[in-house]
Image 1 (tube, rainbow, N blue to C red):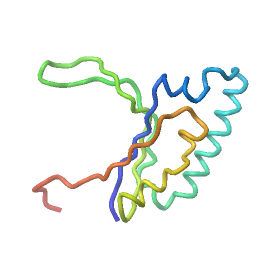
Image 2 (image 1 turned 180 degrees about the vertical axis):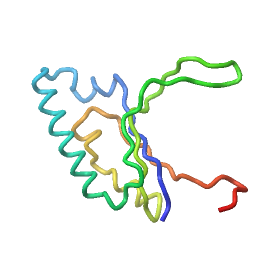
Image 3 (image 1 turned 60 degrees about the horizontal axis):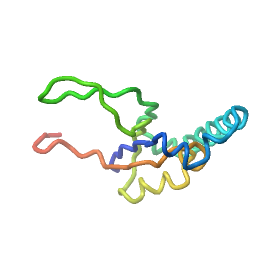
Image 4 (image 1 turned 90 degrees about the vertical axis):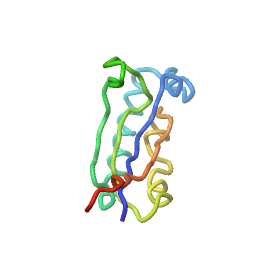
Length: 120
């Protein structure tokens, strides 16, 4: 089995596109509660596949040749799952609550590869 990093993405545009911004505070609270319940159920169904339960991601800093600076990206959370193939890992996220209930954009899934030349 291989490990795959799944990164949940979202933007302010996705809030508008999904109609989230047009919901009342009560409707948003109701949707958040339903979304968290669905997400927990997703986690239970896939517990044998989850290597690292991950969690939300905070603000971003960039370190490069110019030094350190504040940065922005569309990454909002992550999880690491185990699967036989990339396709199998991606299938775990079909209809995920992140975008089917919450206003997330999607989930990007990529294989965690070994370091080239590393033994082990």
